[in-house]
Image (tube, rainbow, N blue to C red):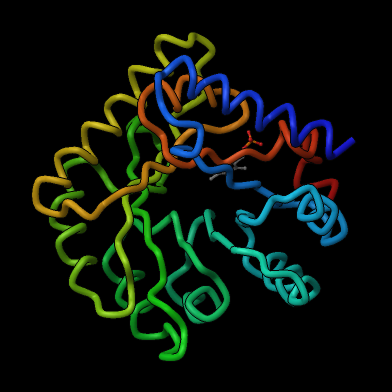
Length: 230
Ligand SMILES: *Cc1c(COP(=O)(O)O)cnc(C)c1O
């Protein structure tokens, strides 16, 4: 079952790449495993999936511990409280949800010396929603400059969660705005190579607009239970 959904999502990404005239390996798949058990993550890893995304710190740490026999890559994609940065710096390979310098500074200070630099995406609040997560497009250039100077981080690019939108053309418009923000940053920081955008409902639009990493939960694992049922 998980294997069937996994190959369907892989196929969807391949087709989207074809439609976008992009190489199929220009887009990587981040499996979003929040609310899923360690056993489900293990099962998906046996299908060949290596990168997993988590939103809730304690739940993630439990899974990372339970699956430490596997060579998985862990991505933190949820809101970050600045007093909870240490376990993120110690146990993750990537963080997609950095939206302020205070958090980035702490992640850099707390990154263990024996580990490679922590890969960072800056989260941008692109739909300008009431949601507090993500910096504004105006704040991006200064934040990117400052984060790029931190020694134990490697700034990779941008992450965005546009507000849900059914119309594929409108999905594309917002993703194109994120791509343009990255292109703008690349004038000063040409090494930036990551656009973390696209989820189960808008994979195709995201790939057409240049996503390099889609974050997919529901299409792989099925619908999540609401938090109250967990
Ligand atoms: C939950 C979540 C996803 C996955 O969403 P689906 O619609 O289940 O694919 C992707 N990105 C972030 C930041 C999430 O919180």
